[in-house]
Image (cartoon, rainbow, N blue to C red; front, side, top):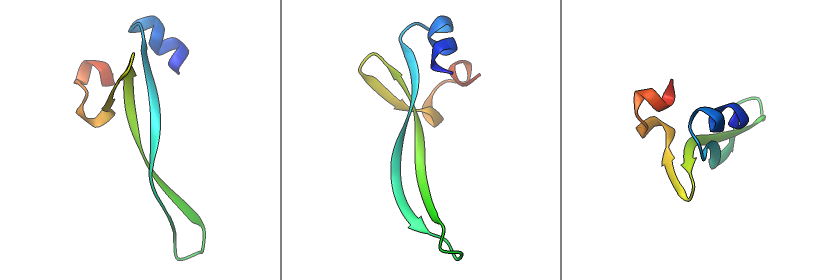
Length: 55
């Protein structure tokens, strides 16, 4: 995805950051994470990006 994305918007990549880990009722590990858009050294949570970037 980052290969195609960087061709459309130079220097833009999508990264993830782990928020927490827990276990569900079946004892399976669950990981909560958040998507970030990264342009050079600036990271912005993807939910705060403009609709144009999200599309």
